[in-house]
Image (cartoon, rainbow, N blue to C red):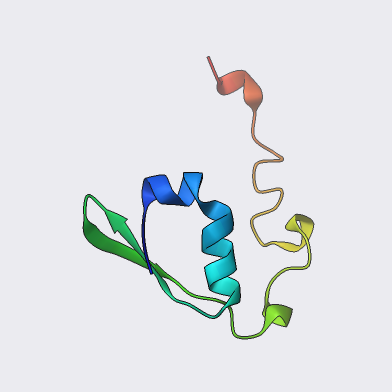
Length: 68
């Protein structure tokens, strides 16, 4: 299956269904392949929640006063 970046926004549920059927999705940017999405082999490898992701909290010590 091919999907543009616009499709990722507008047809996300269709894309998720395709991934659940073990389809690979080629993401196109300006008509050229930019990325490949595929289902993960073992759902146990994915973080259980956002809090378990390595990037969670990476901005917790950021000084918001630096933003103008």
